[in-house]
Amino acid sequence: MSDNKNSSLTIITGPMFAGKTEELLRQIHRCQYAQKGYLVFKPSLDNRYSSAWEIVSHNNKETKAIIVSKSEEIRNHLKPDTELIFLDEIQFFDDEIIGVLNDLANQGYQVIGAGVDKNFRGEPFNDVMKSLLAMADYVHKLTAICQVCKKEASLSQRIIDGRPARYDNPTVLVGGQETYEARCRKCHVCVKNEYGKK
Picture 1 (cartoon, rainbow, N blue to C red):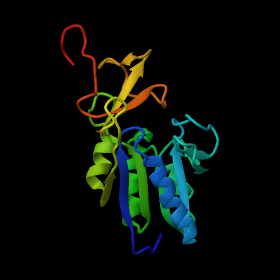
Picture 2 (cartoon, helix red, strand yellow; picture 1 turned 60 degrees about the vertical axis):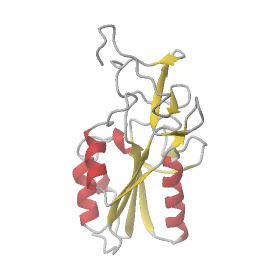
Picture 3 (tube, rainbow, N blue to C red; picture 1 turned 90 degrees about the vertical axis):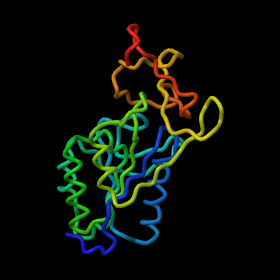
């Protein structure tokens, strides 16, 4: 158990291309500079830039990470000197991550996670994100730049074969610039089905 007096749960969130992973990496580098014990985790589902032990931002900044397929595995990697726990792409962890991160924060660890808050439809990404955003002590909500009008963007636009994805497409599709764009509310498009229903 950590005796860190700064124990808390912090969530860094926003749309694709808002710099969430870059902010997470910035926090990790501060931790390294302060010579604090830390661990970095990413879910096995996120293999966009590396199938190895790394988290990588869209501009190719990176750091080593432990890949886990189940949230409970995080506990097995804790060390006596661990003070901070960092997680990238938390929206891709299983539902158990909610209890795991809450427990770790209650036990004295400083937990910092980054993840997308909304899916391509503009709705909450999933129950994991809804719960973590509600439970967090601190939420840093970042914005991107709309690829259409260049204003502040809070939504992720999915593109399939050069066109906006339909509402009934699967919510999870791991991808980068070839699949997603940042959009503002005005420029975001989510195509309804032929019956006019979402």
